[in-house]
Amino acid sequence: MIKVKSFLLGDRIDLKGLENRFEAVAFAPLTFEINDNGYVVLFKYGVIVTFNLDEISQTEFISSISHLILGKYENVLSEETNVDICDSDKDDLITKDGDIILNGFDILKFQLIANVLSEATVLDYYEAKAANVIDVIEPMVNMLSEKGKISVSGKSLSKLIADVMLTYTKLVARVGVGEKPDALWDFPYMDRFYARLVEEYELLYRDKALTRRLELMSDTVETLLGVDQHKYSSRLEWYIILLIVAEVVIMLLSELVK
Image 1 (cartoon, rainbow, N blue to C red):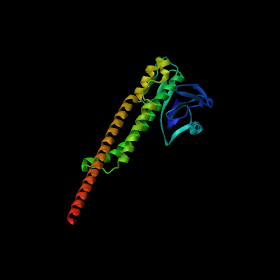
Image 2 (image 1 turned 45 degrees about the horizontal axis):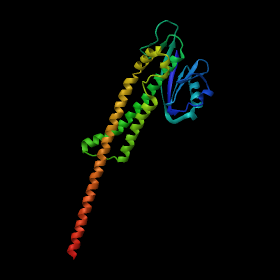
Image 3 (image 1 turned 90 degrees about the vertical axis):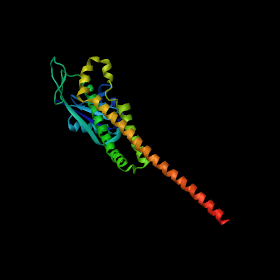
């Protein structure tokens, strides 16, 4: 049984020049052979996936590329599964426990497994991040519902909108969850295997649900920002009215003095 583990290390990994440091056995995604029968698959959006590596080898490899990790995360998120390789004529399958059984070794299958596992790990990260933002927004909405006002600055709300938009941009532009991997264009016979993996990890459903959640959060924060701006505008209008009244009073007093 081969242990497969993904690690979300940061925002990005600079892959340039790595081919000269390790033995690349495949590209798109970049795949290295480490030690004997161990493999590492790297993704530029900050994830590596290891096959058949012990904890010491994993730690050593991550340390060796630490200077190439941009926007490094303090807490490394990971996900794992098991792969079993057997010699048979049966189709590849996924067990009820989520283990993957392959009918023979194929580096392309490793790459497809890594692709799906890496996207699942990224979704874990952004789902948790979205939940944290919801925890911030919910008290504001409750206050607006109960008191008809909010006690949050427009600057804080604008920052929240920026965070939501940045999360959505990273998810779509960098990761592209569920998009067909480049390798499948050259090996279409792997489509069914990849589709089963995507279904097992519910990538398309989770991506769609997360996108809806991000859109809802963005709309909610924009609404709160509109309420805050309206409050500021109303206050400004009262200031103007008071200044006008003060000017009229001063003019009247001046006339009385004359």
